[in-house]
Image (tube, rainbow, N blue to C red; front, side, top):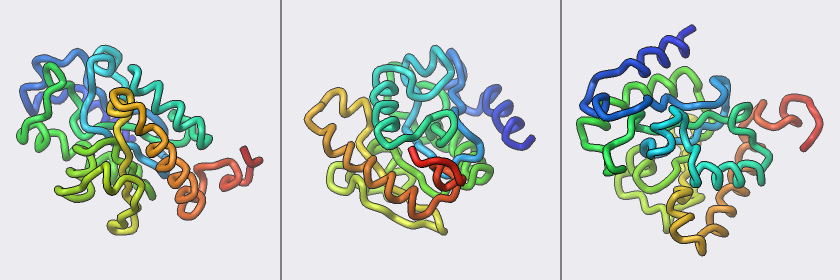
Length: 197
């Protein structure tokens, strides 16, 4: 399968120096048939250790928000990062590291063909929506690109540092639920012909 071949290529990637310091490549997780993609900046320490995206404290918070709008991260969405290997000491990725990894994200996008993309945090939003995007000012707003709806919300790690912003993020997830109901066809049970959750 194309998706499995892409994953294997990514797991053995040596296109930039991050391959020397990583423990695991973090390809992403969830359903290859997902209509909703969540995209962060890059893996942290917990993600590097486990090879899975958003598995530390910030991942637990993300799971709480997903549960609040009845999304299961394995069944209903796909979660990944722009950069698939952890930069040392969680520094920002360098331009050559972005460039080395972007083809993997583009191919994930091509194979999954999401109807909705949620950028987690400022850096992902600035790479995928607009270079001057302000998450604090523009979170929860929608931008359509070639038939795909993009939005951004505050990164879960930022919410752990500033818990007073959690209600803002919750509003973004409520808006996401409504957008899913508008544009998706099989994310929620009622869209698949099943019972409403």
